Length: 388
Image 1: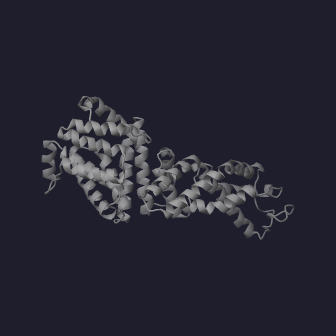
Image 2: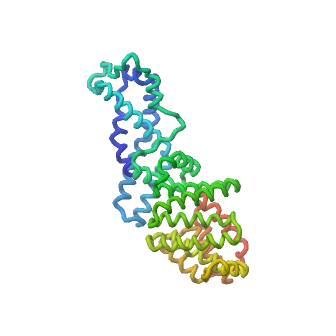
Image 3: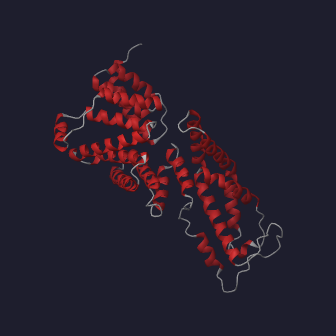
C-alpha cells in the first residue's frame, strides 16, 4: 500500500484536473462514466494523501517502535475509511492506461489538454467501440489485482492488521486473487491469515459449520506457503496458528499431534523473529495447555511420541510476561496470564489481572470473544478481590 498510494498521487491530481469535452464519447459509450468516477473519487483525495504520508512515515520508523505503531494505527484507520475507493481508483487508472495503449496503437494525438476541439480517438469503421470498451471495463464484480506485488502486500497488511477492516470483504478479495499468486509464500500466509480472521467473524455469528470449513482451509494455505518457503517467520507463525485452531474440530489424538506441530513452528518462528510478541504469547499458550493436560491425555501423548510434551504453569507465565513486555495491555495475553494463576489456585492474583484486562476497550472480533470469557471468569472469582 505504501508504494501504491505514493504512485497514485500524481495520477490522482491529474484525474481531478482533467477537462472533459465532446471527444470522450467516441471512446466511452456513455458521457457520464468518467465524470461519475471522478466525482466519486475526488472527495477521497485528501484522505488518500494523508494515508500515503502516513505509510511513508512508517518506512522511516523502526518496526514495532512506539512511533511506528502509532502511525500504523492511524494509517489503518484511514485505510478502513477509503479501502473501497482505492480499488475503484486502481480499476479506473487501469482503464485509463489501457485506453492510452489503444490510442498509442492507433497513432492518435494525446494533446487534448492543448487543443480540446480536436477529435483524438479516430477509430476505423471496422472497429466496434462498444466491444473495445467492454474489454477495458470488464465485469463490474471483478476486483483489480495490482501487478506490483510489493504494493499489494503492503495494502493487505494494513487491511489485515486493522481492527476496523471488513474481514469478509478482505477474505473475498483474496479469494479472487489466489490463482494468480498461488505460488507466492508471502501471499499465501496472508491468505491463511485472512481466512482465519474471517473464521472468527463466523464464530461470533455462531456459524460453526462454516467456521470449521475455514479452519481447515486456512491451515491448507499456510501449509502451501511452508512448502514454498521454510525460513519465513510469518509462514511458521501462521502454520502454528492455523494448526492450533483445528483443535476444536478434531479428536484427542490428532489434537495432541497438532500440538506437537504447533510447538515446532513456534520455536522456529521465534528463532527467526524473537521481537514478535505474538510468538511469545503462542509459546506461553502452548505451555499452559500442556501443563493443564489431563492424566489420560498425558498417557496418550506418551504413546504418540518418544518424548511427550512437558511444560509448567511457571514456564507458561514466563513467556506470557515476555509478550506483555513487548505488547502491553493485550487483552488476550492477559486472559491467559490470569489463567496461569487460576491453574495454581492463586485466585486473588488472577482477579487483579482479569479486572485489568476487562478495562481494555473491545475493538476487534477477537476482543469480543476474549471479553466474554473474561466476564465469565470475573463472575466466578470476584469474591477473591482484595483491597490492596
